[in-house]
Image (cartoon, rainbow, N blue to C red; front, side, top):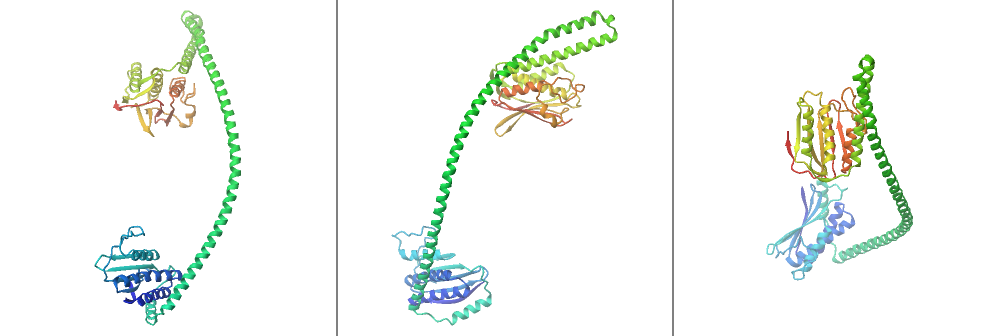
Length: 469
């Protein structure tokens, strides 16, 4: 709610001085500090003088708005009005009329919390100056009455006294400015000293850092040399081990065939002499040789995956998957299994190695779904962070993820041989093939809830994906 404390006419120059006095006095009665009193008085003095000079006469209303907690001064006239450049820079072009008038308004605007002009050429001007009440000040309607009474009994101060008051305010402002300047100079000196100390410490730290960097560079160079030497040594050892593994595996086949052959002859020619127990021993020998032959075959396959030179070209993975599935179906035609294969997945890679990898992955899925009533195998892709991830998923026996660290190690099995046949070399072969293509392979599974094998190929460039069932 707004209360008008007093209304004052502006007709003569003395009214301008009176307006300044009253503005300061009201600000004092409301509870503004000396600095705000001076700002309010100065702003109104500038507006009132412009009213007197350009509009000849006008009026000033002093208002307290209790709801908005603000002291409002409204100056209005019916003079010629003008164009107010409210949104432009504070400097007014020299070609504009009343340049000093505009400059005074700009100054008053900076001194107040709120400043609004309603003006138009030939239609007069109304200017509102607003200062928010001090936070600690509480004004009630009773206080408004007290202020109004005090203003009624106020006698104007003489122009000389007003000039003296203005001079006093100017001296106070100059003293405050001098003290502020002295304080700033002191802070600058302190800050300069702090910066000098910081720079000195920084220089010491930079020297230490340069020495540390030099030492790190030296250590890195030495480490790189050692890594190159160790890598070369490891490559040589791996090459020798691969050659040894291949040679041993290859050389074992001849005596193993001899054992198997002579065991078969014993079983056929001397069955009666051996008796039932002897026949059982011979069968155990034959089963063992067959198992060992599979181990040797897989060892040779693992060695070839590492030793063979890769031939990169465009490969359609979807076709390789379908080829592997047809092979599995031909060996087990009675299986009724649901297949979902995405079409036209084309990558860059070695076709023969990728076929081996997919044969092993799909062979595992085929094997571990054999006890499911409604088996399902899926080949698909996932796009993640601009990378293509391929996957083969089944709903078979799955495995315990706690054992996943053994998954890709040679001859490591996560299921009993009595439940699912195999010797545990297939996934080791798959991992080597994927790594040779610059990719990674991992799995997610749960017991009796199936398994999903994910893999990436660095050179992959998958195209048109169409669902094929």
